[in-house]
Image (cartoon, rainbow, N blue to C red; front, side, top):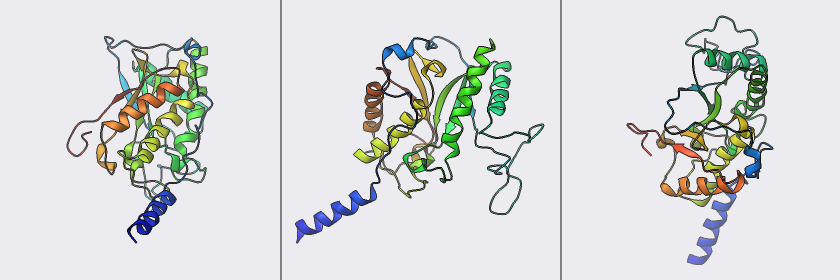
Length: 249
């Protein structure tokens, strides 16, 4: 009886673990040659970075109007809402230009991407939809001789608890480690290496609060570093964890 119950429990766990899709973007399984045009900051450099929330869209009212009651979703209002959308290359180009004018070196994209959000109807799909336009915007600025900020990842860990699959991710489990890594992998697979923000040749990944993970330990960090090196030309990500009450990793 014990063995039978154990099999049923294992089957239930397996059924809850939906398949993690392959990399989102084309920049995967890279070789060192793919980094020929890439540049890196040094750990001795003094650099300025900013979080870049790019989830707004006038056309769909995303994060502009609160869907619950139709109230204003913006704390601060830009001079105009015309073309104010993560799908717009022109909008991203303006944001990156303003950052460059302010002396900002790194734009940390606030990314809510997760294996559960890859469906175009998912509420957080804007995370994926905005990456292509921001890359194109930066490409155009570089061609114009500008020096826009390089692109890094701010991993919004709330997706480890709140997501389309209603999965509370355990980062000590194999599935949880693969889930976490998939978010990092998907982001960088959509960004050509020449646009990455790196320090000592390590792409920048900042993590939000630890509290959203069901459980965590050093294992998911080690797994992410090893998997990333395998798929991204031997590069190891520079993961920076958040400190503070209820957020400590």
